[in-house]
Image 1 (cartoon, helix red, strand yellow):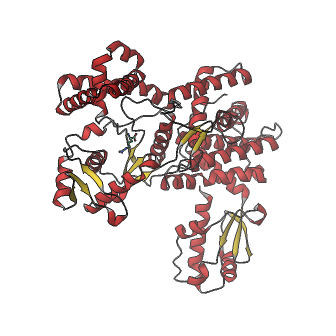
Image 2 (cartoon, rainbow, N blue to C red; image 1 turned 45 degrees about the vertical axis):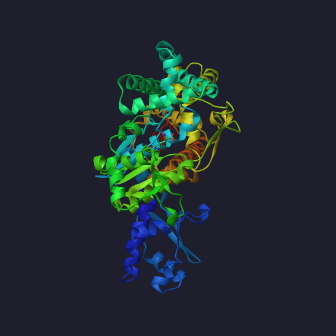
Image 3 (cartoon, rainbow, N blue to C red; image 1 turned 90 degrees about the horizontal axis):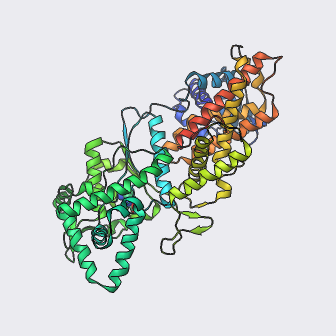
Length: 571
Ligand code: ARG
C-alpha cells in the first residue's frame, strides 16, 4: 500500500463530497501532497491555495471542511494550519498495512503493470569494435541496464540493444595494419589491446609513408564490397572485441537482446534515403546530400557524402525504422553521453520532418562525463582507466576489507565480487545522470556514507537479524510497537518506494532509486541502533519488529536490483 496514494484517494473522494461538481482527481492530489519539514506538523500536508481558485473559497475554509469530512482508517487526525491541511497517520495500522503488503509479494514491492502491452527499446553500452572498454563506458552501460530492469519491473517488454560501432574507414586501416605486421596468435592472446597497438602503429607509420593511407582505403573498399578475406578478418576483429568485452559484461551482470550495430544497417539505408529524397528533404551541398535544419537552429545533417558513403546518422535513421518495424516500440531510449546531444536532436527532427509520429517515443537519455581521481581522462595523454581493470581492482580492495572485517566469512570471493562491483556501479548511479562524475576509490568503497557497500551491509544486517529471529516466526505480530518516530521514518520510506520507482522510470533517472534506497538503509540503521529488535519477554512485539526488518530487507534488495547491484546476505 502506497500511503500517499491512499490518502490522495481519500481526499479526492472527500472533496467530491464537500464540493459538488469538484473535478479534483486522485492524480491531482498526488501532485499536491507535500511532506512537512517537521514531523510535528504531520506526516503529509495538503496545501489548499491552488484549490481556492476553482472552489471559490479561502484556502483555510477548504482545509477546514476537508478536515471535518475526512474520516478514514489511515488517518489519526487532520489539522488546519493556515491554508494547509496537515495529516497525522494512524501509525499502528499504517505499520501493519505497509509491512504486510510488502511481505505478501516478495520482490514485487514498487513494481506495477503500467507498461503491460508496451515495448521499450533501450540502446545502451553500444561499444566500438577494436576499442577497449574504459570507464567512460560505464554510465551508458549501467544506466541502460538499470532502466531496462526498471521498465521490466513495471510490466514493459524491453529490448536491450548494443548498437555496435562496427562500421567506418578506420577498420580498413586496421585490416591493412594486421596484414602488414599482425599475427593471429598475438591478437588472439592480446585481444583488443593488440588491435589498438596495430592501429597506433599504422598511424605512426602513415606519417612517414602516406601511401599507407591508400592501402587502408583499399581495404575498407574491400570490406564494403564484401571481399572474402577482408570480411573474414573484420568479423574476427569483431568476435575478439566481443569476447574481451563479455568478461566485463559478465562481471557487471549486463545482458543484451540484440547486437545489431552500424554494419547491420548497410543494406537498410537505401529506402530511408529514397524517402528523404521523395519528401524533398535532401539538399545537394558540394556533391553531398544534407538535410537542412537551420530553421530549428541546427547545422545541416550530412546524410550522404559526395562519394556516396553513408554516415553515423544515416545508420541511426535506418536503425530507427528497423526498430519501429521490428518491435513497434512505444519508447526508444538512447543512453548516450551528452556530447551527442546534437546528433540525436537532428535524428529526431529529421524523423519528425518525414512525418513519422512515432519519433515522439524516442528520447536521448544523456549523461555527464567521468573523471578519475580528480583528473579528466584523455587517451591522447595516456590517462585512461579500463573498466575491467577498475572492476578487478575494486574486487581486490573489497576482498582486503572483507579479510580484515570478517575473516570467517564463507565464499569470500563471491562476496568480494558483489561488493567491489556493487561499489563501482552504485557510485556511477548515485548522482543525477547529467552531472559529471569524479570516481574516487576512497568514497566508492567506504562502508560509511552514501555508498554501495553501506547499503549492501545494511541488507546483510537485516538478513542476519532474520536468521536469529527464527524463534519468533510463529508469533502473531503486534504492530503497535512500531509507533515511534524511527519506525515511522522507515515505514514512510517503504511506503514511498513505488512512487520513487515510477518517477525514476518517468524521468529515466535511476539515481532516484539509489538515493531512496540509501535513505531507507540509513533510517533502518537508526532504528536498529535505538531499538532492541528481539525481546524475549515480548514475542508479539518482536515479531512486528522482525517483520519490519524483513520488509526493509526486501525493499533494499529490490532497490539494489533495480540499479544493477547485488545484495549479499552475509558480508
Ligand atoms: N558507438 C557510439 C559511441 O561510442 C555510441 C552509439 C550510440 N547509439 C546510437 N544508436 N547512436 O559514440
